[in-house]
Length: 167
Image 1 (tube, helix red, strand yellow):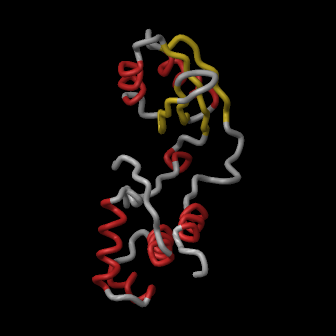
Image 2 (spheres, rainbow, N blue to C red):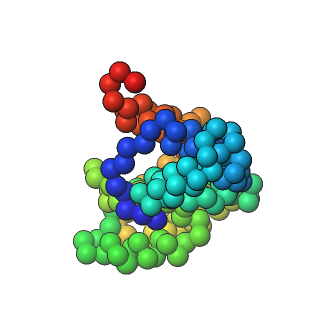
């Protein structure tokens, strides 16, 4: 994963990103045909977007529910001072921890976790908080996900903002 760098994209970059998001298995040649630009242009744009960290992966999107983990929860963790690295390493060792963010406000870290059931969620939470560096946890179970993780509206907005006035 690349460190974030302030990058501007243009409408062609946005169309390429959208095409790859909608059809992640599409090849460069087919992209060039659909976007009506040269194959070399698509490859150069793609290489540049990867190098700048705009595109950071091509892996499959995996649905935890389809793997047998239909329960999603968010846990806000308070940690002991100076224990951040150890807590991060502990949480990285828990397969059900899908994401971890350090945060401001109430708590020090926010993690997204999954479980096989509500009862299994207790096991996962016990494993998460069963570490000396974690002082307290508050957990909220997600009931539904009406706006799943998405970036295409942001890509479209960034492409518009990247254009000089009058275009």
